Amino acid sequence: MLFYEARAKKEEPNSKKLIGYGVGVGSAAGYLGGLLGVGGGNFIVPVLVWLGFDPKKASATTAFVVIFSSFSGFLGHATTGHMNIWLLMLCAAGSITGALLGAYLMRKKMSRKQVKLVIGLILYIIAAKMIWDLVKPLLS
Image 1 (cartoon, helix red, strand yellow):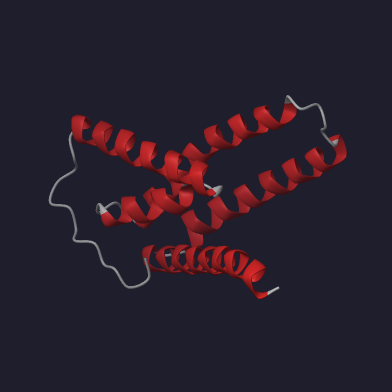
Image 2 (cartoon, rainbow, N blue to C red; image 1 turned 90 degrees about the vertical axis):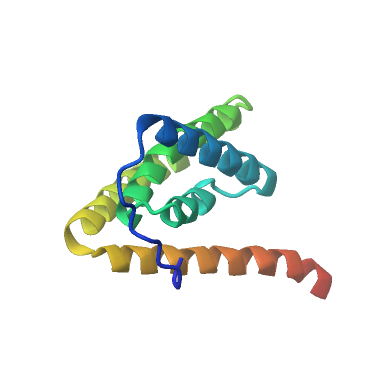
């Protein structure tokens, strides 16, 4: 993400290509996200940027898609009956506030290059944490 520069697309893909991209990327991201226990957005944004989509559009698309996977995970957890309502309310308020602030900053304040840099850094941090979680049990 940080060092890759996608070639500009000569033309917008037709609707059949977009459907193919969406189904392919979404299926792969959902499978890998479920298998590894991470959000599918970690896979969707880099692939969309690699396919030549603008990082801002890729981020916005991923933000929309993540709603559905998050909601299905929430419903699965809610069926266990062990919900802390206060924690749920606080997390929902924080999530809504953060989403509004992030959307404002990305739309009004950040350039394409800055969005790409932030996404790349966040992906490196996530990768470092995942590696640490794998290595930590071996060290103890």
